[in-house]
Amino acid sequence: MRLPSLRRPTPSFFISVAALVVAAGGTSYAAATIGTLDVRDGSLRSVDVRDGSLRSVDLRDGGVRSVDIADGTLKRRDFRGGALPAGPRGPQGPQGEQGPAGASRWVLIGRDGTIQAQSGGFDIVASYPVLPNTAAEGQPSNALRANGNVYIDAGEDLADNAIVATVVLQNTIEQDAAGSPGAGNTNGRAPGADANPEFSGEITVSRCAFPGSTGIPTNCAPAGAQNLESFVVSPRLSDGSVTTDQNRKAFYVILAGTSPAGR
Figure 1 (cartoon, rainbow, N blue to C red):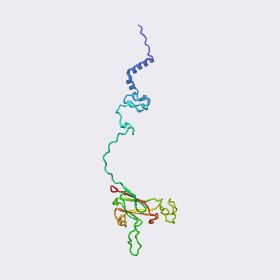
Figure 2 (cartoon, rainbow, N blue to C red; figure 1 turned 30 degrees about the vertical axis):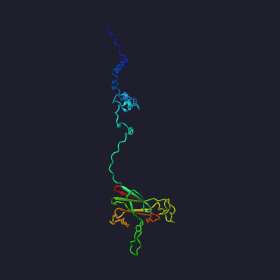
Figure 3 (cartoon, one colour; figure 1 turned 45 degrees about the vertical axis):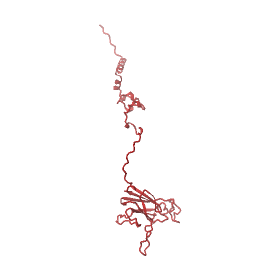
Figure 4 (cartoon, rainbow, N blue to C red; figure 1 turned 90 degrees about the horizontal axis):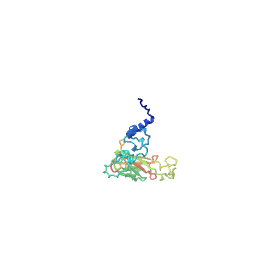
């Protein structure tokens, strides 16, 4: 008996069988065989993939919408700063403890030796005083021995403080002596030494009764100044000359260090 001959399967036959297998396997086959490397970046939406198989580069911009995200699944860290609206303001908390006192105080002394402004706690003891003459008979009067100085009470023991003083620029006040090279000039550019007292000057400051390295206390002559709470400031012309009513210096003083509360 002659058996029928079998024809060799054609390529189209194999393709049909493969299509049938894929159709029977459904999405499970596709999920098992298609990975992120098989997907063009930016081509997918979140609904196109199963949980856990999605990478950021696989999504196209704008592909994820609110409906794609389960309610309550995002956390604050998932949002950039400022993206979430602020909630209502909570009630005010209890009053905290008072902080330490400020580390510095300051005072502005005018040309006349009076306090023009201050942060608090300063009083004038004496400004450019004329004192009783204590010179021996026949000797020149020493009544002006403190006349170039201003004595200030800081209202506290100055043992733990530093004192800094600086003259104030005064370019609206003529301070040159009549007939001097800088007379009539307040712009600070008159030629010659000490020709611009409005822009120049020297100043020194010291605690009263301050022993220093010699152990001999700084002497503050006016009554009420020789104590641990007072200091003396001596503004001078830039050549060291004592100032007069014509060319007194306004100056700032800064007291730095430990100050009592409220000062």
